[in-house]
Length: 318
Image (tube, rainbow, N blue to C red):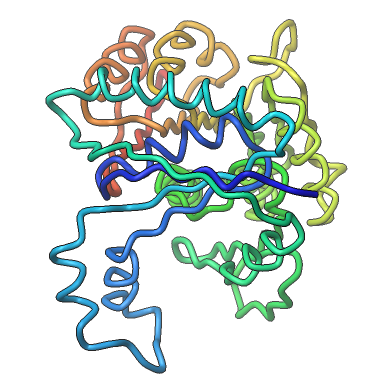
């Protein structure tokens, strides 16, 4: 199968937001090529390199161009590219004065799909998040240390591998606030990573929802892959419409605008005294999201930041 590799030139600050736009138009992968990521990994004491070019740090200081690439089937590429370009224009307008997105110059080339998948898989390694969670691609064998919880993912199908800051912050907060036997509700589940991780951390059951059929299939597949299918229910819906389900923990890793729109609905499925974890929030929208949920009677417990993104934890009632 042939694909169009569509490349957008942006900046480190804008790369995550651009990647989010591209993810909305492909199920076949998005990559971010940023030399600053290599420098960050080099300074991470958990990561060890056999060799690194001494000039790389100097190159990073002067590098302002980040490449974000997505892969589109040839037969639908033109239509999807037109939509991507329109959404990028709107993104630049919304971020004016807050984020430098760079040139948004684009590039296009045709590639063989099988070659792309093989190269893409080579870039994935087990990812350690917080004290206990290890996210591992299903094609890599990993022997966990005592107390580690391994979540295996088939990352081909839907967004949510743990590499994105919004997901990793949710996983960190889950490890802090989840208690054994809790029921967890995840709105906008993507690959199912949060609900599956919650069950493997000790949750009794996880209810997941998403409006994307591919995400629902992916979450169901990943739940089965991790041996927790009987403890995970995935629904194709915006919320748990008509469902009499309440959790001690709720998570929603979606955009700030949608979080605000659902502010009067999401807490209905959270028990009194329960914890709500929200992510996918950029700084210009942070105060708006906090205000929307405090207006529902929730109390802000903490906020975290990674890169351009924020995550919030709220408590409902007592």
